[in-house]
Length: 391
View: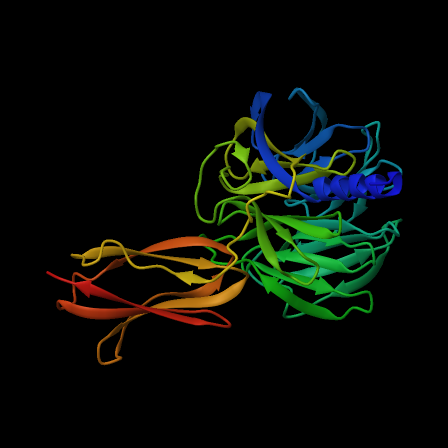
């Protein structure tokens, strides 16, 4: 084997090693108990945090978890962005204003509205985008401001209801995460507005939270489902960390970690780390998601490679049994129960499923003893199995 071949194989192995990255979640203990809403990793190395719609302050957090007051006198500070000069812009939920805060802590009013100011974004040109929500219930408007605070454009579209996050890709397209519907909206540079996708299986009254763009993907929290998503720019959702609908505080590898109402969300682009803070409740913890390189040559696939519908267990059963199945990709799926005459007895679910392994319980206590069939429908396949209910 010549030197050129050895060099090629060495480079190939290094490339393979870099392709595989396992996300690791750990808890940072803060030195104070606070309820934070928005998070921002500033170019000065600190994490900045706002104390939410009923607060009045912004804090700085260092790498050891020490929390210090940066500014106060705000009126319900929520979301933040940073411009190229290190200035922080923050929306105020109560006043409806956007405040500009210089690195030395000087506060000025950047823009005002007569409603509530929520989600906030900044593009590469330094233009600021703000979600303005009415005081009463209703559809939001999205405003675009110049660097000096001049109103450039107002977006009002039936696809935009109440975005909780705003992010921009490298091409200048804008993305919005819808809080209540869980939809991901794309606004192109020519102002075409598209619904790209939707977070699967919302289990609570709120769904998508904060949104960031990093490393050619979108990343978002899901308050109702207690997970963090990695989203392709065409709207394909996959779970970065946590488990759908399962709450907890466990650290560890991404698929084993647990979150409770993750909302505050920020990325350190230089270290490739994400920070997550839970909503609603004060706590002295901050979660960090980092990526550890792992070899992919012998790595177990992250998602199932085949759609499977397994035999129910127990079988025969009385009156409950568990049905397990595998989904290989984002897919609309349903699981239905039929009797021997082909009559539909029950639909156990009918919704979009992420790739993964699932198990669902079936209770036949209201049915007569006999043979039943359960059928898994996905976007491109149908699987059927038989089970026996004996009272």
